[in-house]
Amino acid sequence: MDATAQDLCALVEYIVTPLVDNPDDVSVTCADEDGRSTIEIRVNEDDAGKVIGRQGRVIKSIRTLTRAAASRKGTHVEVELID
Image (cartoon, rainbow, N blue to C red):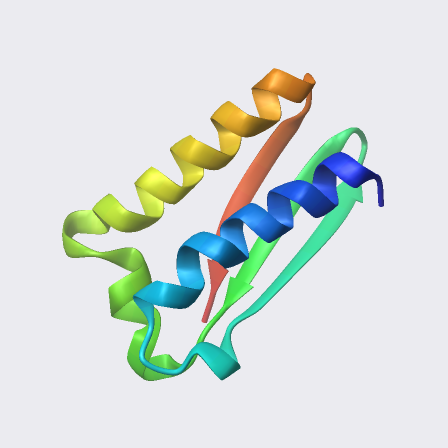
């Protein structure tokens, strides 16, 4: 995994951790496949709604910020919340 993917993972973790009630349960993992980075977010079941937000606004914003940061580096990234 390259430095860009690690930076993006750190960004997502930095955004998600203050949103949840159980920050110790936050797990952000990165995977690179065919030039695409996938960032997976795992949180406590009770905190999933806080990360998703009303009508998906929070997760959509996280995806937008991450994609914007990735585009500056010339990479493509997908962010997924794993239940």
